[in-house]
Image (cartoon, rainbow, N blue to C red; front, side, top):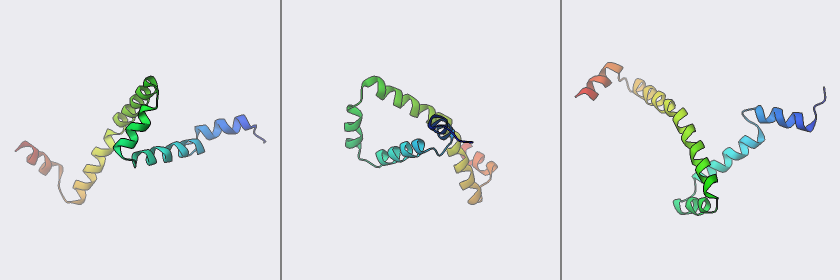
Length: 93
């Protein structure tokens, strides 16, 4: 079964590790490694509506991933031998 270029592109787009998603991910990692001044300088080059949309999309991802941090903290506490009851007692002090 031969796929047209368009069909192949659509299937790649649906994959989690499509070349485009990998490229954007690497670009964002590199941007995150830059200084505050460089990030702000790059952001100033964008139209305001585009910048607002990017910020909105990041906020959505942050909201959707909040549970990851809670899970990570819970695993760390378990590894340290701290129980849920002990944590609750500590927080209620």
